[in-house]
Image (cartoon, rainbow over all chains, first blue to last red; front, side):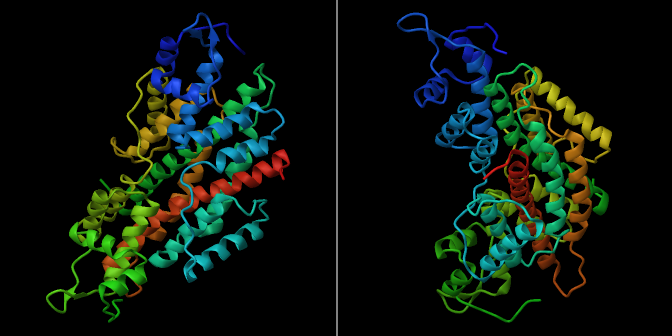
Length: 219
Length: 219
């Protein structure tokens, strides 16, 4: 719910930990809506601005999404006619890492084919232009070229990720039942999509450190 | 096994897809051992150079590890007195994303505490300076600030990652049984550590796109 709090730029900067110059940049780029003018040179900002700033920072700092793409995502957060699926897609297709140009040698082609086959076998509904296809193919091609050990196999990773996604996607969906506005719910869902990927990567590294310590007897 | 193949710089560049200038830079930085001189101005390079170049590219391009840190990792690959645990640690602690400076406000402190508690509850063996601790804490702090939905819960992610790590870490460990040298096995294991993280992230995004399509009825 919108609280009746209005602050000036300096206070907005303090509370959001975003420098004034950066806030002004976001205002110029249209990422942040203008404040309410209180004089010719001053304006007041409310809780909606603070929330929006936090979301922008999560997208820019944790998602490492370029400012232009952040504007594209926020337009979908604010547009009630955009489906949640398309809103999540706009976020996910902008996240780093992005695929580099494909390498179409024999390993690259074999890896692309492996990705297509895996998606077909699993019956996953994925658009042909999903960047994660190329991201996966480039990693698989590099694994082939490096003659790296097999690991637990693609299906083990895919099953684990499908099980998590089946819990995560519904749970971050705006449920609309706790008195929040659609924009507030959409903002929370977008932040969650970006931040849980970081949570997963960090937990993977911690789990691997522990497994390595147990398996190889570490410090 | 080392094949008796010796090529000149131009051919090494063609086969590795690494530009000659970049190969020369790696030679100067000591990432790549010198070739065998065949005249005052020429040298020949073998399969070991090609393998090493592929490993460097995986670390630099997929792991986004700075060249100085790549040298640090390769020194551990080549040093038989370094334990596998320490070799894997050198890789993992260098991978992007790295944590940014910690934000020690109330949310940041609560998040750090949450990470410590989780690791203690799970009984994971993690060094106090593991960068993934701060990486996880910064994501959890941002989730708190964004008032984001709860998601499936930290323990669900942690269990899934522990189950994968318990398969992955032993499987990428050099087994030493297929006629490969220790360096070859270590190179493969290091490449696998970096590349499987990319595989996991890509599969997560694909699984989420599918879950979103099913849950929200997408295109």
